[in-house]
Length: 211
Ligand SMILES: [Zn+2]
Image (cartoon, rainbow, N blue to C red):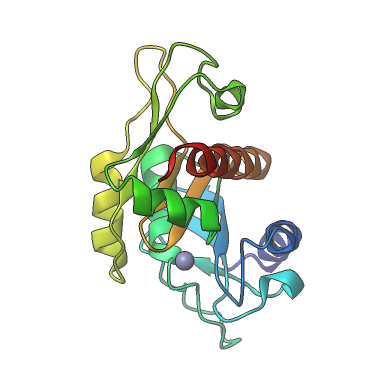
């Protein structure tokens, strides 16, 4: 069953977020996608539909998908979930995220190009914004190779994702090489914060360390 009201509310939230990230130049063309986790058991996500300019996304341009990222039956509007909805669903399942952001930010693509084994960052005040220490901690933003197969991409994500343990927080972001980045959080505000801070850290790292 599709709860039209909840989907519409989620659509309004995601449309506002899309406009924000598009204004930063991170969702060029129709690239990038966003999700909100609406239900956990079974997993249900509101995901931006494919093919729309994210600077002018409307609340109705959002669809409900299952734990594999597939459109739920009953939606007859002819919208297609983002091609990457499957990875959003995997991130929600593995991390417990309430929201996830995927953008084609140039700094993330550049960082993935320079450091395909992961981008190590330490001694930066902004690390506090993704739950880590400003000093004395080496934080690695993982990089995975790109794939058009969301199951394969999800497996690559799970292989590098480190769950929070022993008082050490997760790294709430990942770079997909030659593609872009994902960031997530307990709610849309946290996902936004993690996206913007990770992009900032990657931009600084590329500017100061890339040769
Ligand atoms: Zn993408």
